[in-house]
Image (cartoon, rainbow, N blue to C red; front, side, top):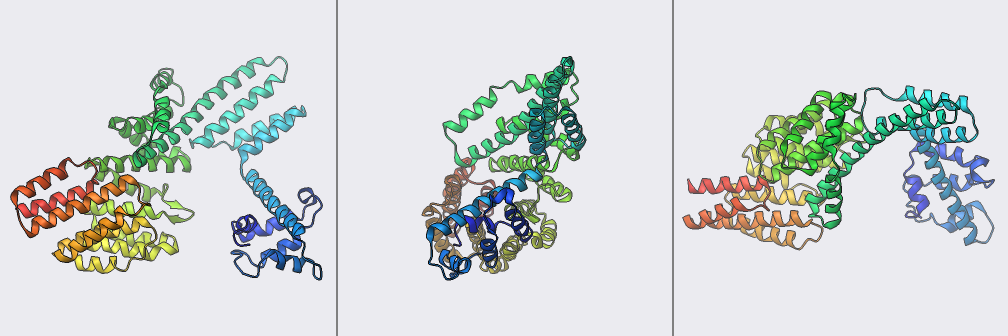
Length: 487
């Protein structure tokens, strides 16, 4: 029963939603005259996990129909009916919370019934609910919805073609603006997939289609005609081009400048999307070897935390974001910032992530302070949450062993790490190549330190310098260690 569709659905409900669902299920309008309450009451006793072994169809039937012989079809009909009712409840809940869809559906119904006065009232109410400042998908979509329905309303009133024309004109403008918002998100998704998975023809075709759109002409035209939305159109243009033309950094800096100065003009969704895009751009540039984006990302992270933009997911700070902010700060020797960050934000992680991430963070911080033995003590206590944690611990532990001059132990650790990474099918291809390269170079570095050879060191330095697979932070560390041996 635990893995049944009904149990999984009910498990997703909060206690308050479960109570509301009981009232919903009792309504004859939705339950088609069938009484599902006894079944729901029995199931509620096992909420939220529904993992008791005695919870079976036979057990429920016995509770609902004491003394009767078990009828599989009856139970199937009941459970299936309650599951459909739960889906309908979620649909109604979603509709209740979605003002745009409610307005659209209600306006259609009013129009079909020729209830013009009520239609106009709905349009007026919808306009009042649009935030006049906060730009984003909701803003432009709702604007389009209102103007489109205005055009439909005035088209039904004889002699008001002027109003119809005005509504159509405005709705078209908002439709294009809404398209730009959607496009800026989709293009960044394509860009990230392209980086991570070395995408094939399908993604490249989609990117080429977007490139074929003359967005610059559209943006320039809006500016020339002094369109009231020209600045925000220019912002979305730069956001899109930043993903399409990553080597042209001016798009990034223009997008960032406008966002820094006008972030409060965007809704929370757009704020989050933009700060993520800015961070991803910096991270990619850093992977390509551009050091200046380390500091830029650090400032973006500080801004993000200060303004609480896209930092929390259901009240908790994202684990990957926590890790990124910590490593970025330490890459710039911002140890005090890192310590304050860990102290303040570790309690804001999900409860099940706090212990692991605190130990990992202390491993990083002690390494940055050159307390390598203490760093290893913390790292050895890390209880892995996912595969990325194992990779981070392996890299940092290897560096600590190197600093402690534990050559024999490190040779063994390098070999085991290469086997772990090379034989693990769950590690994404580019990541696997980058981490394997680090351990290959580390093995050569350690050999050179144990048996110094000027020519081999120079060859190693050159190989690392031209290698485009290595992560930037790993490359810098290896080059630093070579310089130490040479000096």
